[in-house]
Length: 181
Image (cartoon, rainbow, N blue to C red; front, side, top):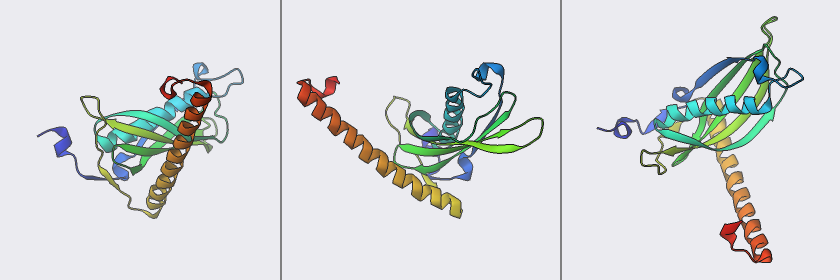
């Protein structure tokens, strides 16, 4: 029996939850002593990937960081805690939500500093897209995030179609083949 065959057809949101904590050191910060945005995005990508791995139990790749809100700066010496879970599973892709808090190690004050949505695609061993288990939201909050993920997906697809149409139109004006842009 393969790993894929032994995986359940449906997973709960709770089974995908992941958490990571990092201490913000000088190498992570800019000249103002704040966490670099790219470093925060790296941490978010890792935590979102953990949730996607837990859901799909196969290789995954991050296909998009759909949205990120930098709410407040993270300072040198803060403890950064990131939590993720799958908001919705589609056929071969998943949306993970990641929420980030910074804790001042001297005062213990903990503040919400960032949130993001990531799209991941499951990849099977030969390198093609693989199917992912369905997701079963259980709580009212999980059901809201499940519904919201579908709306974000529809928006992404519409925006992708709009950009493709614009590339084709630009290529036609320039006389280039659409695939060569």
